[in-house]
Image 1 (cartoon, rainbow, N blue to C red):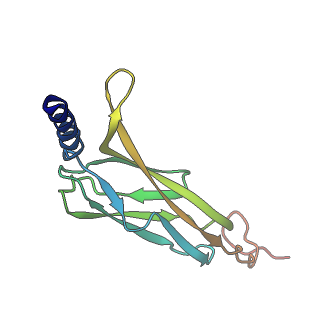
Image 2: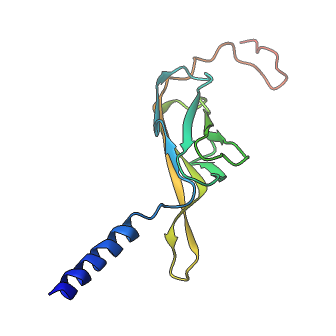
Length: 153
């Protein structure tokens, strides 16, 4: 009976130790994942920032950041972010396109999510979003010919 109790205690203790292991590596956490511009004037300068923190225990590296189209341009830190440190990703949207905005930026990192079928590390891609509405284009003024001079009508 004592051997049975000792066996159960050993199995329980081992499972607790396995679950208590500290995860190694970088982790990325954003203070917000969506920025709502609201209504933006056509041709305006809509820039926004997404602050993040490396909550892991190894340096975080952002290897790439890509907008879902050419109108969404991200700028990200190229240097590693130390554990506990913060960083900022800046996003600019081209407002020379009237209508609704619903775009994303995919951020490639060195945060691992496990291994693929071949045993290679799988990496985490974070996604942040921007949304809003660009107002109508201003009405055109005096027509201009190819030389840049006003036309005489």
